[in-house]
Length: 580
Ligand SMILES: Cc1cc2nc3c(=O)[nH]c(=O)nc-3n(C[C@H](O)[C@H](O)[C@H](O)COP(=O)(O)OP(=O)(O)OC[C@H]3O[C@@H](n4cnc5c(N)ncnc54)[C@H](O)[C@@H]3O)c2cc1C
Image (cartoon, rainbow, N blue to C red; front, top):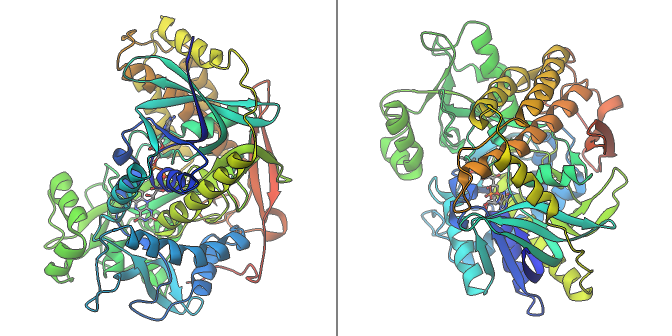
């Protein structure tokens, strides 16, 4: 028998989005709230966020939420839902002040206000020049957010189930009733019965070879909902961040360019002047990553193999670097043995952020189709979700903003819903599917190893479906994925024990990653245009007549994939060519 639990609101995930949701749900004293997390909360990836959270506070120079909303829509290559961007740009201002009042130690201006710096794609007066909008705590902004929110959640008496892996969602007659989870310490299966379930499980960057993402970012719930027949929105829009440390992908924040850092090719040329004459190195990430690849392709890459670019900070005052970018300076010294104060740092684009995800309304309710039919009792927020704030390309600092704005909305909405409805019955045997899958893996005797399949997945996704794509590379990747999926069935484990069986969980996570890759590749093959982070060498133009719509990818009952659409919510900003 599974261990059974009952909570009005269950939050899956304890990153910024999950903790914000839990906190706000817990403000409603009539609802009992629990958070389930496969990691100890403060190990969530939000803690690795460096550069800042964007909000038009105007502390350093004039700024307005309208400018922020416009930048978000333009940065998203007009695939952003404009009502979402407008609401976001206004609410994020309050949300940042709330974090300040919770005690978050932001860096400060000389007058004592929250310090702000420049970041890619954030401009004054609708694109005129770069504006200081990113509120930061040195280059540890996410760490400070996570610690602050965790402290507050403890104070608010939220119950935590740490190192519990959610393996399934209970979806009966179209409504969500909770989740099934595996307790790492004991190997026990638990069933969590809930009136409202909030999914806040973060990204899926581990499907690529070079990534800034932590090991745990395996897209678990994007796969679980997909297996239950729900769609994933816009998965083809996957962001590569321009400045990952060469070969290892560890991130150097865009804040480095916000503080004046410059990208240079092997001739020492500041090549971004050619690609984005007005904001240069602070163009949106999709543009900068593509420019870097083109420089390398055309023989202007740095190094013996000509396959990286230099990030040059040597002209910046050493004190500023040490004070505002201490962590990334250490990363460069430790991992590459390069001191950014004295010499340029070798960088290359690194897989960073999923713009797409589980589709939601502006109030974070999960939707089941292109018509926007809501799934009662199911909410999603943070990187796992797609509200669609980021459209085809996210601006730096807009993810932390997304977490606090939509995490808060999810908590409030879910608690309201839970206070209003009764528990729907929990059918017996909801844990069987998860149990059978684990038994199957434990009992398998095939010779395949998860590590080999994962490596092939990551290598081939990098080759065939990263910054540039074509019909040929995507068709090839579809075949590779089908083959990897067959081989996955033969994966066996050496550890068949119950206690802390991390090997077993890695196999389960690999299954999730394979689904995430499938969603991305089918969507990318379907969209025969280039927009934002989705760049097709065989369809280089943006095509608004045909493709100004969201993608919705579904898995049919027979295992085949179906690609549908969902309308974009337009608004006052007419789609225009994206020039910076
Ligand atoms: C290195 C780095 C730097 C970044 N810097 C910035 C920045 O400066 N500004 C910015 O705006 N954005 C930045 N980002 C992006 C941003 O940090 C992330 O998008 C954001 O933190 C994601 O938060 P989240 O709450 O959605 O998920 P996460 O913080 O990733 O948390 C996910 C949670 O889900 C849980 N979970 C996952 N699967 C399961 C499961 N199956 N069962 C139970 N629990 C599960 C995990 O335990 C974890 O608690 C950065 C990202 C990286 C990788």
